[in-house]
Amino acid sequence: MNESRQIRKVLKSKPTIEGAGVHLKRVFGFNEVPMFDPFLLLDDFHSSDPRQYIQGFPWHPHRGIETITYVLCGDVEHGDSLGNKGVIRSGDVQWMTAGSGIIHQEMPRGDDNGKMWGFQLWSNLPAAVKMMEPRYRDVKSDQIPEVELDGGVRVKIICGSLDGRSGPVSDIVTDPTYLDITVPAGTEFVHPVKAGHTVFAYVIGGRGYFRRGKEPLAHEVKGANVFDMQRDAFVGEETLVLFEPGNQVLVATEKDPVRFLLVAGKPIGEPVAWQGPVVMNTQEELRVAFEDYRNGTFIRHR
Image (cartoon, rainbow, N blue to C red; front, side, top):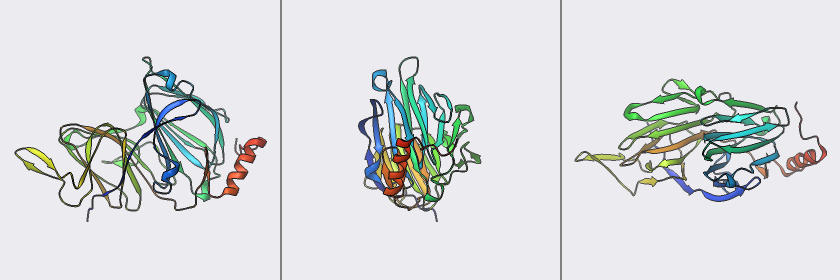
């Protein structure tokens, strides 16, 4: 039986400053653990003023996590202690597995008009692979499949599968899904999700109804969709919906389209010890990580 996921929580992103002075919106973070397990943090950096992002995120370490950067507009220059360097451009994704440790920097540069817009998601690693060898997956925009479904729904598949197509990022231990979905006005979209996985949607454009009840979402009255506001959350930009258990997500629109990121992953269910850019399982492991950093022994693999 297909059961649309109800809504567990709705969060509005909040302004904060990170790195060397980057103005961004924190969607969720430290205070929401373990509600989003295996995910740790989601930031939305969106500005047309270079002064709000140009100082970027200078050299800093990571251990025990994966960072996923998705750029909608502008460029982000990056480099690391292993000699990797490059530019993440509009539509590109960088899936970085920090594993045993990496030191890197990310420097937003914007586009020709000074606009910069992107997202960074942190995903935890289970204890068994926290100290794995670091790796990069730089995915160019033309490598990301885009499918069009009934009703004109468009989906970019970064990770996961849909309509017989799979995203370019695979072999990730938490079995994640990462989709960029646009639902036109007056349209209903249903997407199957794995039972037991954490699932959330973050609205980046327009607004839509995110299912909360079990009854039919809408019925036709003189050709117009009528929605029950008691059972459906009407959600706009810079707002996240975290879903309850179920095996599908249902989203619908009325007069406006909606664009959102749909993210899902298998919970790890382990203790989280988190300090800054390092996420381990115990306080002792954190102590060792920062001692390694001070001693110059943070990089275990080269």
